[in-house]
Length: 228
Ligand SMILES: [Zn+2]
Image (cartoon, rainbow, N blue to C red; front, side):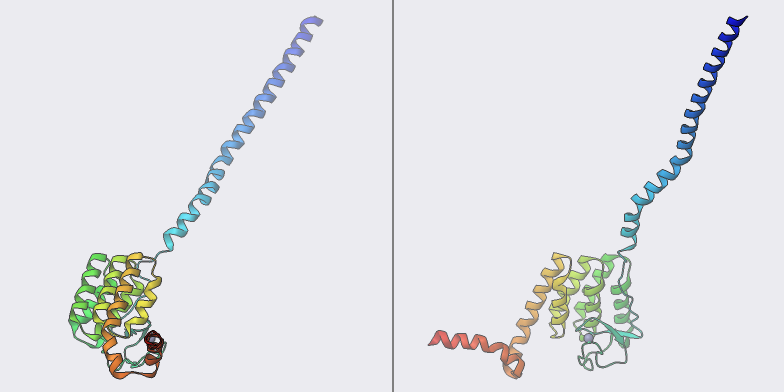
């Protein structure tokens, strides 16, 4: 009787151990299953965060302009009240330049399209057409587009048209566009500056303002020296 009882005890002990072990492993697997989704989510969050930042960073249009109440300074590109004849930011005289919001309905509508249409191809066409008008009142819109449009092709077109209009005020904004992220725009800005310089040079010789004469002086000195 003793022997089988001992054997039974041994068997029982072995069985108990087996149950303990299996329970232990089951517990590990169970805990893993519970923790897995949490772990996965935390990893996903880490992976997604840079994408979230990338998605929110570039906005389609940097600033919104209402041409009915505002005008854009053709020199510094900042928005001011439509009634202002002087730019409160850079101080240039705007009395000789009509605000597009005060002009005819077609020009105003074209300006709104150039600044706000969702399609870059349409904005580019509007900029091109405004440039063809060849009037000073479009300088502000073109300046705004050059500094704010998210599409490089549209900004390039604005730089091109500003060069063709060759108003001295545009020198400042074209100089700003030399820091544009697109090489295409920077190149067109250089071309624009060249066009304006060429056009205002003859006037410079006639008027000969003190600051402009100072600019010419080094050249004259060099000429004098070479002659001697
Ligand atoms: Zn200004």
